[in-house]
Length: 54
Ligand SMILES: [Zn+2]
Image 1 (cartoon, protein in one colour):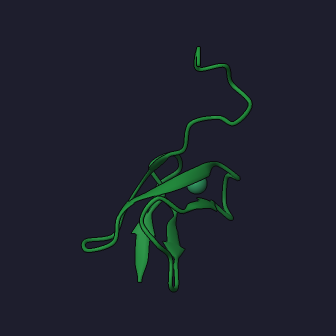
Image 2 (image 1 turned 90 degrees about the vertical axis):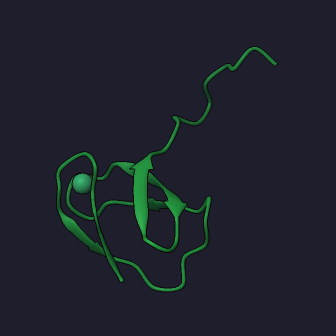
């Protein structure tokens, strides 16, 4: 499966990913969250270490 990086539009090949998984774009290094599997859709993952006010 391939999906387009929302940041740099590169085609990223992904195998056996799960919804909610975070992958790194090999082109721009952005962390991308798998929003859905079918169809495969990627979104920018929220930055880790941020204080969400919990
Ligand atoms: Zn990218």
